[in-house]
Length: 310
Image (tube, rainbow, N blue to C red):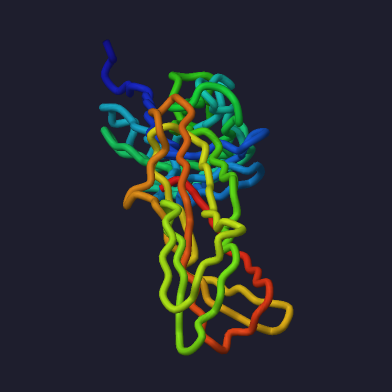
């Protein structure tokens, strides 16, 4: 029991949410270090070959609260945020902590792992928040899916020093396998006879079917569709970028336009399910327009296909 005229000491409690990377793709080798900005929540790749699939702010928010006592009025807290050096899944250990104002403004900031700062003033039954960022490594090997890296937030009344332990808080990510794209076959139109007069075209469908008007296919060599295989995390939706057109040229100065086609579904999706490897194969064909004045010769050209997780 408190005697008349005495005061209860301030009691500070802490809480935290985030950091949360959302969905990320691991690199094909080594760690990918995702750097989370404390002020904006923006995520950049500091090193490695992975990518962040999700969008939106990823910073963490630490909440420091002072209790139901008049001594909280005008009080300040010393706070420490640091890694507990434990993790699950493909997550590595957090490092390089930084802080930025939330509802409170951190002062006397020092260190990065842990980062220490002072915040206040508080009032009775009040809370202040601080945003924080960190470097969040994701490994190229291990179990895909949910990943966590643990850290702590501790606070005591200033001028005391907060402890370097505390209740484990979790920085989170959902990790996909590295995505890769392999070309299995080139697009080839074989040999074509141009129209005797006027315009013409030949088209190779992604099924391998050939159609033509004006221009004529020769029997050999047989035309071939381009074929690609995407490998990555099962069940994930993809963005696949195929140019709508590209140019083919000949040594003699001729130029023709190819309009591409493909057999991708409206929502391309890797086979299997999260936690397992998945693949998706697709074909690219095209229509080649030419006329009676198109110069003869061997025509070549290139087009670039890219893919990423959606």
